[in-house]
Image (cartoon, rainbow, N blue to C red; front, side, top):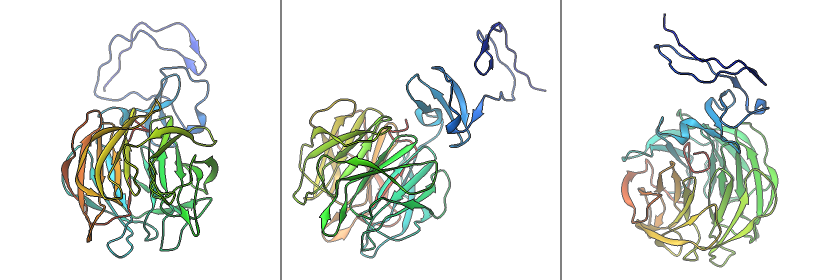
Length: 365
């Protein structure tokens, strides 16, 4: 029988029972059970607390400000990116996936509940969510997948406003959808969901500038929306605090005004790539501050209508359009550095006007 040896037991009691401190040795081939509970049962917690979240099926710890998922803030697992929807030239319900830390071609994942394009996607460490899009009419559909598995998407609920050409970002618990288009007007709408549950989105506030074809990325606390069309090309960047509700605040400007671009992030840096007019531009921001974007490098192929996802260290851009054809190209960058993108592989189905999410992006790492 395996065992765990604990010495120097503290003689005091915490809010949830005995408190053990000064552990000097632990041995054996078995396991130790730690406290477990749902997301809603995070009460009376001190900084440094460790628990198993039975809602998200993840190991997490509290840093005094927010809960961080251990499997995503370390290298214990390889982050997976999932690309969904698009045009080629028919409307696509395709989902395919990559392992972000490696290189190679994407693999079939399953199908969305509804074929559509110009969708937005966000994610937690376990669940990916795709919202809105065109069928070709504007749609309010939200559906979700379990990122670590493969299979078809499941209905989640509805956006507050049916729209296409929108963007989305997320923390580990909340996804926010912003902007878009509904005939005859460009939208400034922000609405949000709690990713671990299902149900309809709730009003969040408004963007600083109504626009479509924009992109978004996030840290664990802040969501950033960049670029788009008003309908004129714009370099606008604005931000929100994801855990609250309210209107967005001006952040700064992209280096190049453009729309139909992609965005991804680590926990500190956001990166925007590609866009229309067809460009290979990549620029970046420091999410915790405000200010204009800085040149990062170039994509391997200048294109627009692409999608992006990331791990805590690597950003990946997939798909897009270059006259006269939709693209299957995937390229990657190391987010903490600057420089040109490198070839990663190919999507399972070449397409543009698609969306992407991952279980290791900057909002949850």
